[in-house]
Length: 292
Image (cartoon, rainbow, N blue to C red; front, side):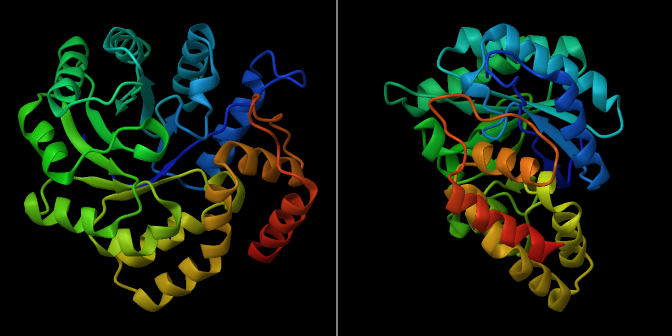
């Protein structure tokens, strides 16, 4: 699977009382991403509040996303579970419903050894034929994998074929590129590092930003890939404050508030997450107005 470009992350809309999914609104969010010319859709990541969904809800979101996208772009399903058994169950479901790949994170309560992490990935790989994106996001998952270890898994686990690096350390991306001779695709998961990451050889950028700012991330990616560094730099700094804000404010809360400001209700994040307060909403509105 040759994946590159902008991987768009939809939020998961809820009913006004936050107790049920609103799949029709999820379809509208996916349509916004497709209009923003994303190259793939990644459901059930951090922005999609996957950690706050029941198993039934998780499966509904995965199934609906694949069905609604209907092959227009690849669909990646995020999996971050405490137990290998549950990760296997979700990986098999992703394959069953027709997803194109899974983005697998090791989620931890106890500190995991590299042997335990390796076995987790290997077991999931043996249970499902889908390509695996090895996802390093220690801030959320409590597990930090080195570039050397992630490349070891890509080289030794059948379906592990690409990496998403979200620590915000550009040196790790340089290390992935140099240690693999540029042969292992890696993706930037840190919004405010997009320009540096793409210049460091990243195959793409995983982001929820197109939910609110359309094809501006795609324009940035295309400018870097075409060698127009002046345009790329201008596009990046145009977006920089916004990209930093949505991460520091919490992706689900920021994107849902932004959609509401644009007249596209997606509900509030699920508690204990809270929507943006009034000053933060005003700041977000100002940034979105400036981005046009």
